View 1 (spheres, rainbow, N blue to C red):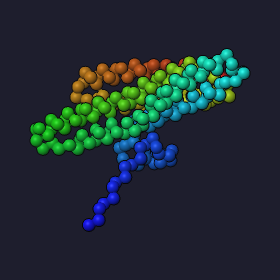
View 2: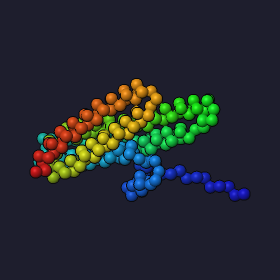
View 3: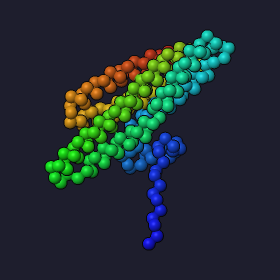
View 4: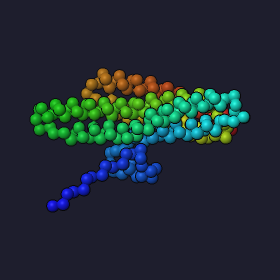
Length: 218
């Protein structure tokens, strides 16, 4: 009998083309789902806002160029931080699915399965919570540079802010659904309350940045 060829692992989501990533999202599989898309939106928001700020340079913007460059550094730091969460969110939910498939024929197996489910649910909560935190921090950087952004790049800056706002909103929904499934209701409520506060900040930062950018679009 000939040896079976070794299985080839599926490529990580972050290594896929845009088309391939969209095809994976569209497939009738539970992952990648909303959490991975939220993380990708956060990365895109950081990238697009950074691009707009990079074009705020040269003699015309000499008085603000250094300040915008600092915001670009922050946005790039956040973009690097959020990129792995595209895959980590899918991995976290796959762990939940695997935990639910554990045997439950005996009391001992049920206990092991229950504990595994709760660990996995907490992991599935923490990844989008990090996406939310990164998106909020990026919105803070976007707001810090909004008043100075090159008017020719105002629509790009606005789109970047919308991506970050959408990432924050979507990430929060993924936090909430997992928090509600935790057996430890006190822990679930605590994490949900913290993320609700983070989302309020994200909304306020987004609205303030968009209001400033709007003055450059008229």
